[in-house]
Image (cartoon, rainbow, N blue to C red; front, top):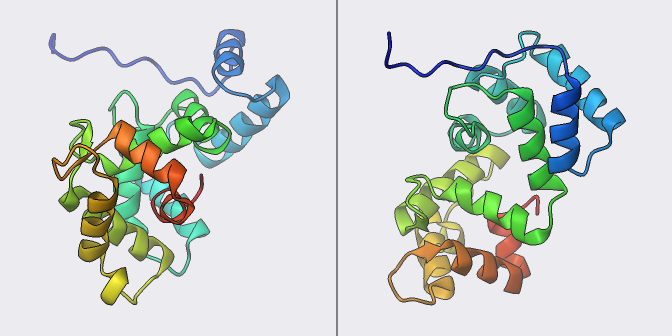
Length: 191
């Protein structure tokens, strides 16, 4: 009992302190923050977004695809404190960074998604896993030739790997995506 860290209580009420924090860390106005919060609480009345609900939401946006694998990795990126749920602050800061942040910030979030092992590097296996999950998400079934996830991952690593270690570090990933719009659209479609 004494070893467990106390979880911060999740309130469904938005405090002035939270609004100030979110205004400071996002580009949202107070009104926009309140609107996002109302929608979040409507979808998650207890103030917590769990993996099951996260998947349900993604499935609404990608009805023709299989969202399970992609959501597993995306959820972990949003759940900054690794407590198994996404609270409103984690949600809005992640939404803001991935949709309104500058290009470098958005590409860094994409890097975090691909870095499944959290070791600061993306290897071919991780890249193949996420490319496969992205194909599943959008319902892409043609995976032959250049669309084969394993081949595509190998080609991307070869193209972006400046250090020659057959892995991509954050700088290589970000720079490569910034310099190649086709690659950016593939690896970070919402950027």
